[in-house]
Each structure stands twice: as C-alpha cells, then as structure tokens.
Amino acid sequence: MRWLVTGGLGFIGSHFIRLALRERPALEIVNLDAVTYAGNPENLRDLDGNPRYRFVRGNICDPDIVGETLPGADAIINFAAETHVDRSIVDPEAFLRTDTLGTHVLLQEARKCAVARYLQVSTDEVYGHVARGESLESDPLRPRSPYAASKAAGDLLVLAYRATYDSPVLITRGSNTYGPFQYPEKIVPLFITNLLDDRPVPLYGDGLQIRDWLHVEDHARAILHVLEHGEIGAVYNISAETPKTNVELTRAIVGFCGRSMETHVQHVADRPGHDRRYAVNSKKLRALGWTPRIAFDDGLAATVQWYRGNPTWWRSQTQECAP
Image (cartoon, rainbow, N blue to C red):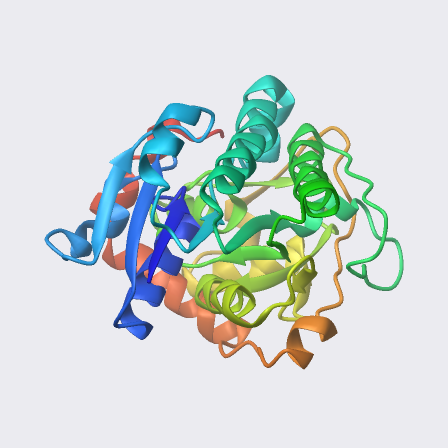
C-alpha cells in the first residue's frame, strides 16, 4: 500500500505521516512538499533512512511534479495549504494558488492515475462565524477571510469532481489544532514561545472569540480513520468539543508557562473581519468510530513542555513570524 501525502512537512501532515507509518506496517508514504516557511524538514528528521518513507520537493500547483510522484499511489491525502488568516489578509493570491489551484491540479492528476481515494484536509473556518449551535457537514459555506474562502473553494472543487467525474473523494473539516511542531505564527505556539522568552503576548480585541481546540494527535488519527473507513463523497467534521475563549486559552498558556496575565498580556486591535465563534458538530465522525483521546489541559501542558524542551527548533523560525 502506497500513499501520496502532500504538505507532509507541515504541522498536521508530519504528525499524520508519523502516525500512519507507525500503525500501518505495510504502508509506504511519498511526501510531496514545497518546503515553504512552515514546511520544516526537521519535523520528520526521525524518518531519515526509513525505507517506507520518501520525500520529494515540489509544489502541488505543478502538474508535472504531481504526475511524476503519483503513479502507483492508492490514496492522496492533501495537507498542502497556506493556512494563516493574517497572512491571507496581506497576500490573498498566494492562498488562492495553493488552496484552490493546487487542489484542482491534484484532482486532475488523481483522475488520470485512477487513485482509489482522495482526502482533502479542510477547516471549520469554511462555515464562517457561528452565532449559535454547531455547524453540520451539510450547512452552507460562508467563509469570511481570504484563507477560509480559498479553502472553501477547494472543498467545492472536490465535491464538484465527485458529482461530475465520480471521483472517490473525502473531506475532513477540523477545528483549531495545537501541539508540537506547530509553526509559531499561530496563537498557541506564538504565545508559548513569547512567554518562555519572558515577552508579552498580543491578544486580539476583547479576547472573547471562541474556538474549539483539538490536539494534533487526535486530528491526525481522525484523518486516518476517515481515509480508511469514511464513505466516499462524504464530509466529516472533526471536533474535540472543548470550546474556549481566547482569554481562557491565554490564561491557561500563561499559567503553564509560569507567567502573569497582568504583566504579559497586551490587548491589541482586533483582526479585520475576525470571526467571533466557530463550532462544528462531529457526531457523524464519532458514529464512524473515532473519539478524541487527549484532554485539553493534558494536551496543552504537554505542548508547553515540548516547546520548553525544544528551543532550537522554534528559535530558528520565530524571526519570520508575525508579531
């Protein structure tokens, strides 16, 4: 069995590759990654020399490189994406290229090679702000940032290929994810690394935005479960059902880092178009047999300890991150 994983040097992709190789002894993985700022070869350095793992440097927007790496693959798992909302506000075109055009290239090449399964890794942000209740997989997409719009466009392409070409596709939409190896532009690693260096952290607006937090190991395991057991053509939300305001999240991180809210938290102007609340219903995935294993407090404490114990990894990257 052979899978093509795209964007496998990134945060969730690298965890997925490690998990899949560990739990599927007959599996071989080819990792196609463009090695952008968030694609770090150190994330999978422990797989150097593994005969079941091969890395190929290339961009999913390039049909030639995709066509060269795809033959013989039983499945494609597409993690490759631009993912940071703040960056999408500054440079939306980069997000359209990777998240939308790149998805189109993968779907076209998958058709040519008759790949048995194509899984698109998406996000809960495609549903937009959810004032009450929880988003279902059948709900309309109402993205409110260039990032979310580019991901929604990719999702719609995937579903269109199912309707038009009968492509064997699946989509997962995960909630906010945290854990080791996350590039320190996102709130959890940015706040942890700032606090470990005794620097303040920037909290947008009043900090009452609500997100559901999912540990990366649980997210990777959910994607593996959907790939192997999901119904072709279906969408699956992934949620640990642990909603936190950004203030609550910040307070927890500050506490685990041994700092003070009064001295280390700075309220800054809110992000333009900042969605107030995300919430997805994951009953469909749970009925398929997946449940999260890592409690929020345990996962966050372990994440702080990982960053504390791996300063070389994150110090080499923090100079590129947005303040």
